[in-house]
Length: 356
Image (cartoon, rainbow, N blue to C red):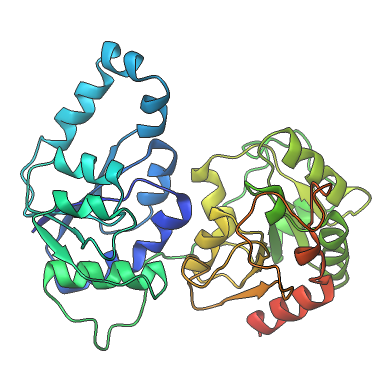
């Protein structure tokens, strides 16, 4: 059976699709699955063993410069790639007008959420078969149910499985950008000592935890003999990462990474602490002990999904507010009160419990 999956973005949404692919692969051993996905997230989509090919659809970039996409022939090439094969089924697991438009360019019977359960109800009008999966459960569960309905199998007795095989990363200091190993890092890696990953970067200022919180947590980890690895994307994140690492010998800021190089570092971690960001979902999918910090956003439907993940949520009446700017403390650019309430001690206890 040949299936085309349309799930363009975001990183968390891509990862939340993995359990459905594992189900489908088990139910249909001969499954050949291609995935239409935004270019930024194609490396993550390729992590799942059910994926035969990825069809890169740089929709965000094309919409920013539509004339360039047309004149360069890029739009035509994508259209040709989507129509190159006839599929037994095309599943739009996103339920948006943009994903429905991409699905409509492919050849095959189109399946998706019905009008009452799609994120944008009008998208359902473009499908040949519509499935009612109400938005009352986690997105990963809803996508599992969508695939089961479309491909005709039962989820009874099937445990959720992201299908990822954690493998210990092979470290190369030069590849990671260290001309010379930071103090103690080379010996630690050679010995295979455990380390934690702190995912401090995120899109909204209101999703960030305090620098003092990260530093206090790093100190507790250091007392337990654990190294910390930090990534940074852009000047703001790098400034925060350097502030977290300052004076702490067990905290190491890695050079800029791609998703291909980030994934094995996360998979090999002894634990991950994450703000509300896509890489946290990847850690949870790998089965790494993962603590998520949630303030203005509600993880109920789109939070961490994995066997060793827990979320620490804000307890203030104003949370979750789903706002990128805090109305309680609008002058705060990092670590709003709802997240500042979460102590490093509470995060450490949650992480220790997951690792037990």
